Amino acid sequence: MDMDSIVSLCKRRGFLFQSSEIYGGLQGFWDYGPLGVELKRNVKDAWWRDMVSGHDDMSTLAGAPSPYAMEGLDCTIIMHPQIWKCSGHYDLFHDYMVDCRETKKRYRHDQVNGRWVEAKGKKVFVTAPASDEEQEVMTKRALKFFGLRNKNIDDLKWDGDVVCLTTIEDFGEVLGPDAKEKGTLTEPREFNLMFKTFVGALSGEEGAAYLRPETAQGIFVNFKNVLDSTRHRLPLGIAQIGKSFRNEITPRNFTFRSREFEQMEIEFFCHPDESHKWYQFWRDRRLKWYHDLGVSSDNLIMREHSPEEAAHYSTGTADIEYAFPFMAEGEYGELEGIAHRGNFDLRSHMEGKLDEKSDTLEVQLGDDGKPKWKGSGKDLSYRDDLSGEKYIPHVIEPSAGADRAVLAFLCEAYEVDEQPDEKGKMQKREVMKFHPRLAPIKAAVFPLVKKDGMPEVAKEIYLTLKKDFKVFYDEKGSVGKRYRRQDEAGTPYCITVDGQTSEDQTVTIRDRDTLAQDRVKIDELASIIRNRIES
Image (tube, helix red, strand yellow):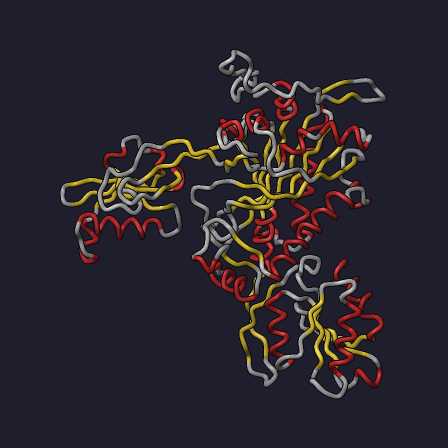
């Protein structure tokens, strides 16, 4: 799988464009084109249908510990800034960065690797951004630093393995990733990842607010509102799809790490004694969802976090990871996280920010001596109307990135094969083998030629089908070229009107993956396509 080929096809066919491209682009931001917006909408619709509106289908309930309810929310992007203090984002949501005084460039501290090397009686820790080619890059930089040519490469004496910059205490002997001189990197310092803005006419700290870094907190602060307005009993899941923003220091790998992205999140509230059963249910449910939509088990893993890696409030966290083409051999990138968050979030919004180590209430005082970042003071506990038991629910959080899911489905769908053209000559074919539920265009309608009434019949079929599906009409070029264009778009079915159509009211429907062509009646087309999509 070649990532460059996938990126090229995405731009050529209108899946994804660099944001603000005509002005040189803006790093970490991406625009979805005509096909991309349909694909992303289909991914979100499939998630909502399978997780929310179809949550009580028999196939889903069969694996659940008990029946449960699901509801949706759509919360604002900007919320009260105290939410982010109580959630811990204000103090803890940061990366460490280093700046280069020579080049004025900035790097994430944990995304720079390096290795000690000696030549001409001098020793330096030469660095490069972490990547598959980092050793090659470091070798070229070491040769240049020591004034050596390629023929003198054996004069470089490497000491030890490649290690992360975080292991180095003294930066005096460090050669920055783009620097000519050593010792130009600053000491690491915190960089808060939240985008700051201002609300209203006040431009000072009184009006400061933040674009949300996750959608989850809007669900937590609305937990009681949803509970009271729907009259559901627990267990209850509350779902939301929406934009989030993180001011990443080094966005990279196409849309994998972006500064603006969309999340598909569920906060599932349940009794503490049942929470581990629900954690296991959601781990299995979410992994199966990707498999059901065509992601190969060879490219997908479930990785349980180690105790050292898990968040302080977590009693269990697992990541669903995908073998993205830009990852090193045998490595995977996070696609979705399923976390057992306990009652941390509801308690924090009730009482105030909890200390991350001792799990006790931390109170900060303002200039007036009063608590500065206290909780809401609202009771967010739950009372069971049958048993009378009152408790703070535990929460299981399946949190998926819509953009990462789209990227994974793009990578999984991309294939190159060879097929004979109209003259029998073998030609390379780039094809996007999306699951029919996700395909941006469900069917394309062609007249074989632009005469003998074929365009008129084809347009009538197109107008009929588009009431139920996203359909494309095309009469330009040979049928073979039109097939190829739809293969690249991922269209699963192509319908051709030909000379026989006027005789028996049948058309040819061609399958994208098998290339099989079946003769079907026009009045059965809609039901045939619907059945194939849903099967």
